[in-house]
Length: 180
Image (cartoon, rainbow, N blue to C red; front, side, top):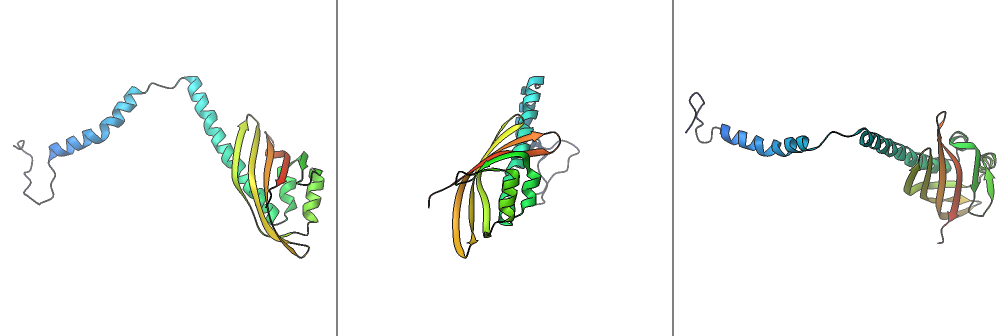
């Protein structure tokens, strides 16, 4: 039976039954309406926690990008990147146990005889503790140095500090050559 005033659909003319449309709408939208009604408003503490979590996710993405940029700068022997991103008081440990400050690191990159065919960072993990972050990753490098081909992998740890003036800066780092 059709309500008065509603068109009657002939078989195959493409008109949908209005009751079916309402039933379909009820089935599709009821869960969303119920969940919206059942969730209570966030407390100020919950709002703050969500904001902090979102900010940490954004900063984590930024730090992963910085690690990948670091690998790219290494591939190009781009010492200006390290002058910009590494702090003035940076301290690093080379795979051979040598301690380098930022000036010595920049000089070693400028004077490097290595010509990289590839250099990239993988397996990047970020942990953020307020204005400090610890980032670990694997560097994989291939190239030629002093006429000899090389292929190396390193496990790397960088400690970053986020200051309000210059963003994230690397303050410490260590590289360890992986066997093989």
